[in-house]
Amino acid sequence: MTGARAFLIERGVRQLSAILRQHHIQPSAQRLAVASYVLDTEDHPSADQVFVRVRRGHPGISRATVYNTLNRFVREGLLRTLVLSGGRVVFDPNVEPHHHFIDDATGRIHDVPWDALRVSRVDALPGVDVREYQVVLRGRRHAARGRTPGRPSRS
Image (cartoon, rainbow, N blue to C red):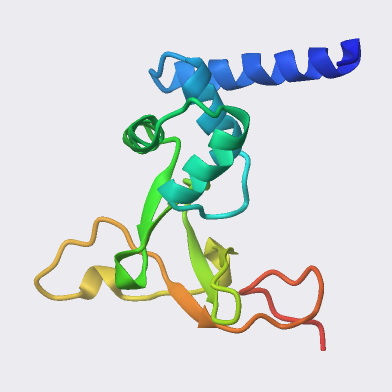
């Protein structure tokens, strides 16, 4: 490993460690391994997908450690869980308000900017106090490159 690459890796570990500490999580090799994947992905992985991915670089990590780490990250506000159809649970590193688009062809979940949709009268629903909401859109993505779901195409 070159000196520059080692420096960049070490800097990344220090930054991840600082993020974990800011969220009251003591960094460990296993937590850093999970964080390095799940906090830097645009995907919305399931716990099993995180386990498979992290295990490539850390073969000794257990499934329980990955599940416990993910749940701790959720409790401390680093991740959110999304429960999709069929009870499928995935993790979302984007904890800011936003919506989701699920591509029917690929099953891939895409973030949709909060301002791309307008939802009205949520507070007027009788008999409920809404804590939070999001819209989950389903359909097929257009083939156009670079187009973000929810943003109009330039036609």
